[in-house]
Figure 1 (cartoon, one colour):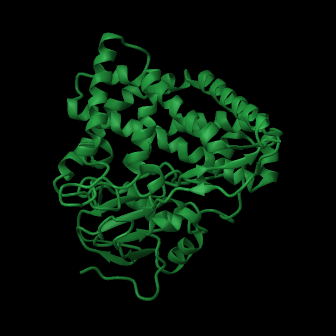
Figure 2 (cartoon, helix red, strand yellow):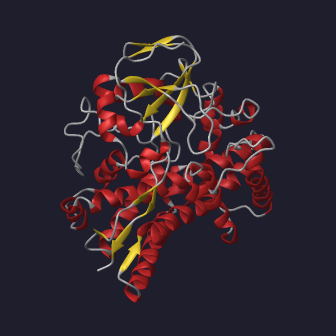
Figure 3 (cartoon, helix red, strand yellow):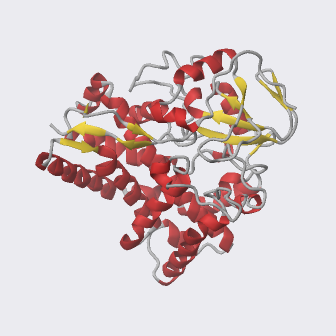
Amino acid sequence: MSTRAAGPVPDVFDPRRYATGVPYDAYRVLRDEHPVAWQEEPEVLGWPAGPGFWAVTRHADVVRVLKDSASYSSHLGATQIRDPDPEDLPFIRRMMLNQDPPGHGRLRRLVSRAFTPGRIERFAAVARERARTLLAAALERAARGDGTLDLVAAVTDEYALLNLTDLLGVPEQDRGLLLRWTQRVIGYQDPDEAGPPVLDESGKPLNPRSPAMLRDMFDYAHQLAAHKRRHPGDDVMTALAHEDELSAPELEMFFFLLTVAGNDTVRSAAPGGLLALAGHPASYDLLRTGKAELGPAVEELLRWHPPVLTFRRTAARDTELAGRRIPAGDKVVVFHAAANRDERVFADPDRLDLARSPNPHVSFGDGPHVCLGAHFARLQLRLLYEEVPRALPGLRLAGPAERLVSNFINGIKSLPVRAG
């Protein structure tokens, strides 16, 4: 039995809480009073109850967990709060995200050969033109209608998806598949995104990362790899298809990881950054007039709206964190958004400061699992945050943003703004 924190502890597990905004007030209570706090894991939205977990909310403790893979394992129980079905766990562990060193390092080195900065930089001109084209088309439609547009539906979803499919080398006619797979896997807690849960023969919801739910994606990965062997291009899937050290199951898992994580990182961060700027018109004006440097601005918007809210580890041995005893086998969940507002690290953390420096946010993680595609994500965000102010001199909300029901992804489903 785990030793639990005394006194009232805010619930930061329920994914429905996040549909109304990230619970920063609750995070502050946890950081100040219960920095490593036990959270119950009841049945929610048709998903069965779990054993509970430790919520880690201070920046220093989050970084410690992410860096110490010997004590806090990605492999033992994978990296999502919900426990996978025990029968699925060996399958899920094939993914680089769910491995520990040294096996993790081998896979990361293999994919890094394909995910080179030079290859990514060559997409910059295409991505910039894509942002301009999407914004121009959205503004034209808004002018013919009521003068409003949804930046998510009209711009950021397509921008993130098409940039990723270019990098991967996915044919144009297949690109919609990647968005549907992302919605199914990432948005599984939100009925609008994933639809009702798919049930197994016993009536239990199937995990969206189970072999049964991913079979169509994996079949496509092999078809695409075979195509790239016959018709190579300057893209990541061509590089992976010709990587002799990569097994067939590893190829499947890389395609899954790049498709889902590669798409949803920018798909979540881009509208989140624009929502922050809409709420801070003085900051938006600094960006529009070139008085704010884009590099630091991108980092601050990532701190303000991290695309990923949480990641799970499992205690590999009895350990202690912030004075709490954590038995081996307990789930330990780091809260990126809470760490990014830690007053112990960030001066005035609830103020948006586009010139903030230093800015050691953990929006792309830390340690051995730091986001492999962070350079690609930053490039896309920088280009988008250059082009939006040129197209929209004023960024004014036309209604409330609609948020994803999720305790994992900090998603924005709709961001209505006025075109004029």
